Image (cartoon, one colour):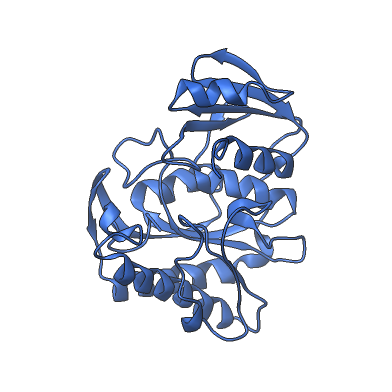
Length: 263
């Protein structure tokens, strides 16, 4: 949601924010713009995976009635729940930069409250790159991403064939120059038309296995707890690392690591 048009601060990001309900409308509008553009190319089986906060931000009643929506947490494949090898492409709407992306709006990776970052095979990844790797395990390429300029370009450096829609120019963590929601939807439709035109040539992004995972925690106590899990070592006060078979295995582990003391 942090990469949705107009979103810059907590006021738009959670139920206590005065603009959250409006931001849910903006988010749902962008999802529907993406759906409409995809279906200009023909019928499509579409699964929407609501992955912001509690996973209940997209307004389900405003989606087309033949679209399925994944809601709520926890779930085994996190932000990519519902994916399998039958899908032609993944589309990322409202993405943000990684924890270490200076100047990006609401930059974080997986958990803004807990994590200092995630590395795969030594490379710092954004959620976009991470989810591209998870989709790649199923042979599914990323066709498109929308968000602020830094979020879009960060993914395109790793997945250059992915089309993008830049809906805001970031000034910092809590500020940006945004287009209007209506204009954002136009940009998303235009970008997805370009993506659909080259769908057959897109290749999945794959991470070489075994995959070395490194996770940084903001609190040392979280790194300490995580280090008790077999297969993880703790090279410094804030970090744990280990080597794993694939992205599915890593994704399940990360859900545990980001909810160690959650009821």
